[in-house]
Length: 170
Image (cartoon, helix red, strand yellow):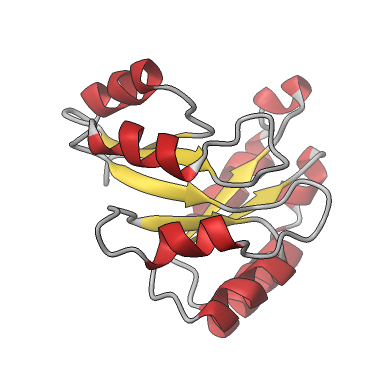
């Protein structure tokens, strides 16, 4: 069985980035930086370059997903994504419009699609999740799907949800 991939999101400082990178020596680690200027965890291009330049041993994720509104790939994000001097292993998005914008920008960076769910039933309904994942993968060649929840009550998954996730991950 392959080891799990651990992803730290919304890193905003060197201390947290280096802590995550240190774990990357024994785990498959990804460290994400929010490039969304509307996010409370936004990291400017200058901070992104400084922090990501100090870390090794993990994958770098440019998180350009939006939270409530459509996020255009703005000038600063475009500059980061198109600069070959910056080490970016993945781009993370969370909406269909973000995928379209990314595809139109013609960047050849692997994609993580983040799906926010609010109820266990959303996971347990493997048919709709599976159809959505297959369709997105066909249209946009998604490399990873990331399921997230901000609800603490969802930390205990039902047996059906666990089985569904195991089935989907195959």
